[in-house]
Image (cartoon, rainbow over all chains, first blue to last red; front, side, top):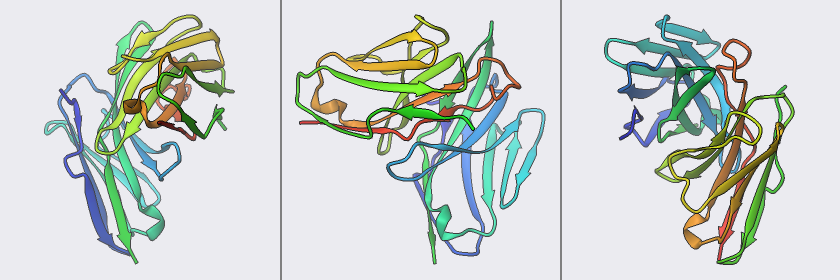
Length: 115
Length: 116
């Protein structure tokens, strides 16, 4: 049973417009969320994160919003650039105590930014 | 910067061969992970390790084993490779302690394995 869901496998956006990638989760124990970006034939790279005590975190063109009551987070990219074309993974973090934690990934959303 | 190095980027192996995928990290991280990535299936955890000589099964451990004899090195072993193990394999590491980069997991470049 998937605890982190990215329901859109792909998204196409015109260059300069906003890209919105969505992620839903089911486990209320998750307390930290991360977004990773992955180009073909490369490992994922960390993009941005947000703690469950916040509802927004911004880093340049990237903003992550968290709605805890809806168990939903979204990544906004403004303005979108062709170099943003990649697969984006949402991940959720749960501190299970005793120095260990669980990390769960969604299946990813492939973003294509059209010039 | 954290560096996670996977020794082989591209491998082609025959069915039934024993395959070793090596991973080394240089940040003294306690946690190390092996994932595989397949189209439409995202990142799936195979095995992870919280300490030297310690291993835990992930979501899809069947057909794989791991070895962690030193803190910096985590090896994934395919005892008898099969065609359904053709995939991209990703090694990752992170600190055990939150607040000391423990909220971020760092990935290697990936190893493309083709089993024929």
